[in-house]
Image (cartoon, one colour):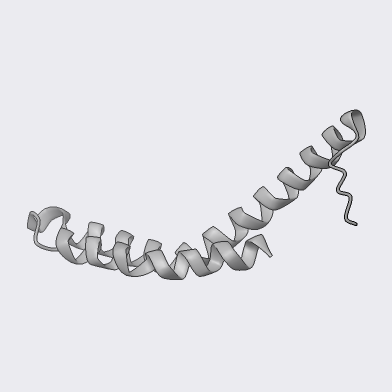
Length: 80
């Protein structure tokens, strides 16, 4: 679930990186091509990177929660 949510966030943030790459294209000509290529490539990889990091973060968070829940008993909810 976290991988999907973070992937969606990556898609949402992608246009901002593309705009930043476009703005950087107006810089010095010696740096223009490298900055544009890096910015565009990073923007296209962003959803996949976010999804992977969300997945890994979810695994680590679940592991830590389960480890601590064994020690202190977790969260108990009573519904009447």
